[in-house]
Length: 388
Image (cartoon, rainbow, N blue to C red; front, top):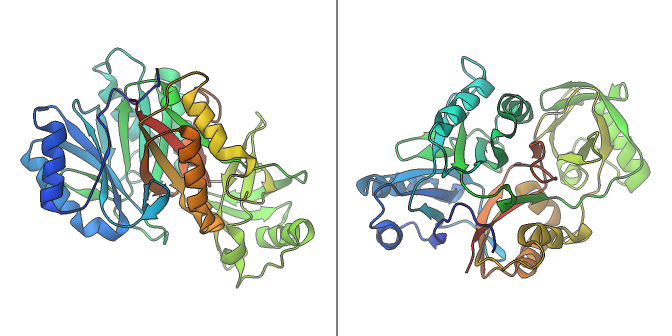
């Protein structure tokens, strides 16, 4: 059989009106006193969050979720409504606000996971699904520290919420409040194979070294100012003339890749150029990391949708009724209108009847089964949400 996420209920797209939300909650969770909802809300509708919170509180339902730049619906990106992912038995969850204030953020997350683990999740090894504020400056190192503490007690997947403008915005919520500088975690029962990640990038031959970095900034590449070295690679290998003025126009199409010892590549999209010539990326870059300058693939290149569908389905397994998809905002910016083509390719390859999800600002997962969790850009994170 197909592996879903914890024998959940079908997900529902609902307009943000009291009558429509109430009808959905009544239909799904009328007789589920321990039930709850995970909600995916687009930024353009964030003013309606209090309505959703009040309706869930009135029914005694747990509510958690994130605010994203847009939603995925079928083969389109939309900016209205909300995806409700209901559970008759709400899985253990935690929301850690003020993550980078006071004690170590990783310690806060690990402590929250351990408290949530104390009652076993149906006796199964759970999957830790994380929603992070995209403005956190240290997501990659947080993942490293969490993995060192928890190792394989859980499997890992996740996405970033927030604004596509990369301006700070409270973006993670429960039934009471909405938080910035936060991480939301859910311990989902079910197999780790429920979530898969793919980016479809091919590796160039020429490797570089990040000789000076701090956090999300690459200061120097091969002992030269990072912008100077990056500009030279684009000119020599891709025929692109880069300037400070057209930097953002081109950088999304030529992200930085961090080479791993396993042969994998972790993508980092440069989103800003500092006055000193450093490249500011979405996600940290370790000092002395081996780098490559990638050319972002065209829609469907590298068989990305088919690879994802194959990972999700497995040979001879049934096809899912619903596909939960998180699609990177940077990938959409690169592909433009062709991003909807890629959504369509994924839906067709998976055989799912419907597809829903959100536009994400960074993705968490492992490219190998039950492998080390890494923070990615320009990727797709997908799960079989339900099976017929």
